[in-house]
Each structure stands twice: as structure tokens, then as C-alpha cells.
Picture (cartoon, rainbow, N blue to C red):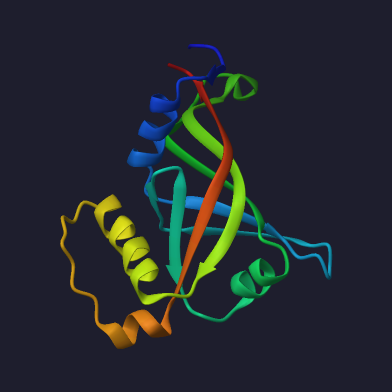
Length: 154
């Protein structure tokens, strides 16, 4: 099996994000000091992650108080077994990133984020979004400050 290796090439990191189906978003509530981690569908474009969901809830409450976030995405993940359980391993390619989340307020910026999300899952635009639905939901943009990649087993 291959060794653990940092991925330095930004194009390889972006390729992992392009192929990943979900990210895990880590938040920290400054009032309680508790971490909060959730899996989400996402879109990626121009060094930004886009998310969408309900306009209220724990995720939104925490982002309004502390917009520093961390996210993780992985692909090609597989458990490698062995006759000796102490030799089990995991093959993967992953990205961890850090940034600041902002809740988008304007209709056009929300539509831009929803378009990136839709395209990430294989749909081709242009898209028509119902204005009332767009107004009701929350679209979050994470401006990425830094990302690292890692792979093991290849």
C-alpha cells in the first residue's frame, strides 16, 4: 500500500472537491464552547464553497455568532482489511479547508450559490428558481482562506 502524502497541487485539491458529494462542516459555538459538525451537500467555485438550507436552526445561529469554519471532503475512501486486525487501514483522498462563512442576503447572490450547487451535482444551467423559494431559504458562502490535501494508499 502507498504512503500518506500531502497534496500540494491546487488543481489536485480542486479535483477532490469536484468529485466529492458531501462536505462535513465544523462550527464552534462561542457561547457554549461546543463544536458542531454536520454533513452537507455543497458546490465549489472560485475558491468558495456554497451551502443551502433552512433560514433558521443551529447551524445558522452559530454562523451568526462565529463565522470561522472548517470543512472536510473525501473521495475514494475504502477500508483495507487484513488477516491481522492491527494491520487494517483506510485508503482515501481528502481536503481540509478553513474560511469564513457569510449568509447571503441578496436574491442574485443566492441564485449564484444555488447555481453552483446544482452544477456540482451534474445539472447544466441556466436554471430557473422560484423567487419565493429562494427568498425563504438560506444560502451560505464560505470564502476559503486555506486548504490542504492528503492521500493514502495510492
